[in-house]
Amino acid sequence: MHESIQLGDMVFVSDGGEGIGSVREIRPEPPELVIYIENAGDFELPLSAVHGVHSGKVVLDVARLQPRLREATRHVRDAADPSYQARGNGVDEEE
Image: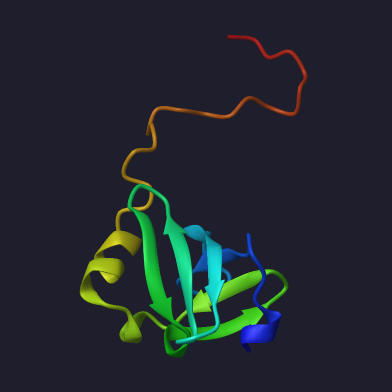
């Protein structure tokens, strides 16, 4: 599994869910990753806490996460502006 993880891969807590961060570093001994979690910073993660890897995605096994990292995954979008709405497809819209 370690061989298929690449720097910059997106990190998820569930397959099909929203990305919560990215892989910043891959350490061979002990086998672990440094992952960046949005709104929380960098965390060291043992490879045993990775549930799966495919298509540039690293899916975590939430049950194996340390409590501080598990809590950080719950607050990824806290700093997002809830009133923000993306504009349409580039066509001028009436306000």
